[in-house]
Figure (cartoon, rainbow, N blue to C red):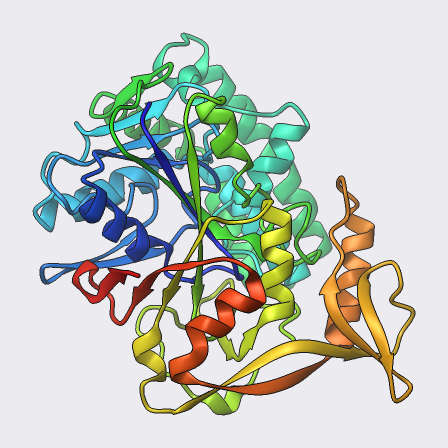
Length: 433
């Protein structure tokens, strides 16, 4: 392997990872994009040469001819969604998208049954799921209920595995329906999973798709390689703010597992010139008055509304700490703040609860002034849920930064160089500095 460039979002997702990957592919001449975490809940919008696509399974450099996608074992795969996305890309001129896609045999499959039951749970709990079965599949895998790509592509018993999965999830769906018998949406979802023809249709679709793409044990990587992360570090399963998290690792850890010490890793954290969050969960600097229109992220049935706020440097420092640091920042959406001369940034919080185990702070005028969110070593989801409540109570302390000084402010505050700046959606709108 040659030098590896790993891309991760430093916020709650939607930072501009896809367009950053597309830029790196063009700038570096990279031939492979590796998906190293998450699943099809990724929604990485890329605009290139008049084409627009929301990349979900495929690498965000796929508009460039010859660039391959390598889906590692650390990514969850929904074969039906993958096939649909491939058909969309083919209509957009990427006719060979399947032949230049490689999927590891050990990838865990998201089935429609898991997606349906996950949606039923979300209707009950309202945690802010994407509704794509990610959490449900991770939960099943931990309990020993899993179908892998290898099972479908090689095993003669995969029909029985699918049927067993259907029976288990149908039983769980019946239990949820029993708890919410009057909920129309839950009843409609139950009717879908209870359809006896579901498995037969699924078997046919899986068999057709897996003959089109490359199923591999491992793929040797050459030349500059771009690793594309999904979601944001502040949504990380162990370090995010419970229960409003994704169920996968959003840090750089999986990148290190894949390269296994064989390559230098350049860690690139992506952030917007302002903060965003899709759906429920703490958002200390949220400010609806900003009123920025969003081109690609809107209200949807599962996540809820798209929220906007000011830059939060307390959260960004925590994100970098969770990642183990970064070598470079990709700063996106700078064009969105062109209409202002000054940018409002939060550099501290004010908190009044018992916060000693969660924050570093000073006492000023009798108030606890928070500078840092403490990273907890090892998973402790109960602790992270307490942290969520404390963040909900925290009040941002703002300062004004002149727009022309923003890059210097970011570099000084985060102790990380801003290496890429983006003033628009296309790779031609970005530059190295």
